[in-house]
Image (cartoon, rainbow, N blue to C red):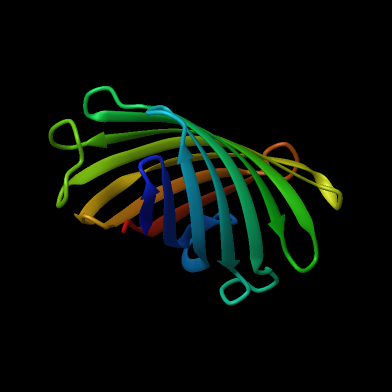
Length: 193
């Protein structure tokens, strides 16, 4: 849900669910988490924006041994929109707080969004999404963890204020120490007021 307070300042609310399709060398269908988040964004101009976010992740209910998480996020985004494409570079710093630890995550994401029809994505139309993300997580309780994510999917503009997105995501988790391969289906709904 995004609410434009002024011409260059907006709020966005989202609900996202992540389902594990592959992990630990086996295929499965398990819900991993449910995220509720809020972002406040200040557009500096038509290409640059700053944002801060707050997220709560429900994970204890779905995965044994995991903890729920409170996350604070700071973001810088640079995007351009030639023709029917949008290219976005995003840098994020996150503070991830659970009952047992606090970690700091740094993320770089490059994403492409393309309209199927015309130069803009209108109500009732679908669009394609692709992204590549590199992550570094540091904490005083563990060694640094590096992760690579590759995602592709489709989104639909259901109305002037609702978008639905379904993305498949492949992850190389902690690839410098304890390499893990994971494959997810991520469904999300974004509301714009």
